[in-house]
Length: 219
Ligand SMILES: C[S@@+](CC[C@H](N)C(=O)[O-])C[C@H]1O[C@@H](n2cnc3c(N)ncnc32)[C@H](O)[C@@H]1O
Image: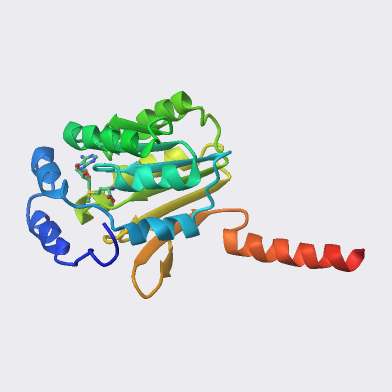
């Protein structure tokens, strides 16, 4: 989906889910949300803002749907990418699309729940060769009941607290109520970025420029 194709009435689909009890059957959630995919503009911003490289990074989409974001990140970055979703139908579509895009060797799709994904992701990361990635980016585009579920946050923290040096969580559309975050916005999209990084990319680039100038002046 291009930015231009993206229309906000998609919100209506979510708003009708929001009226349902928190313990809504997953089947219902999956059926309604299966048509909802992040616009590619969001993925472009992920690519700009997340310090991902082919060599030492891992990308994870919790509630990956048909894998649009996962497959694009894999194509552009070349790092192992993991998509977790409750719906086998969505996962099958995601795998087909990864194959078509020639990134099925990088993309690992796993059935799992957003409240208990840690072990699933760690196992898939091991299988993909991303045993101790330096940078991990976790993305999600989920409805408010899920975003604000404490178990989701606990699983994200478990995943990012281990050896990860550069940890980024990016969340679009519906944002957690009480996570500390830096909002990154432009004229088109606003994403929430939560990061634990020794040196965010913009600072790193600035530091590299300064180092290069000093290096040039030294000679
Ligand atoms: C809005 S879609 C997002 C798709 C994809 N992340 C994207 O941005 O294009 C939300 C996804 O959450 C999945 N989902 C619903 N309930 C879930 C659960 N309990 N655990 C994991 N995923 C779930 C749905 O199947 C759906 O694919």
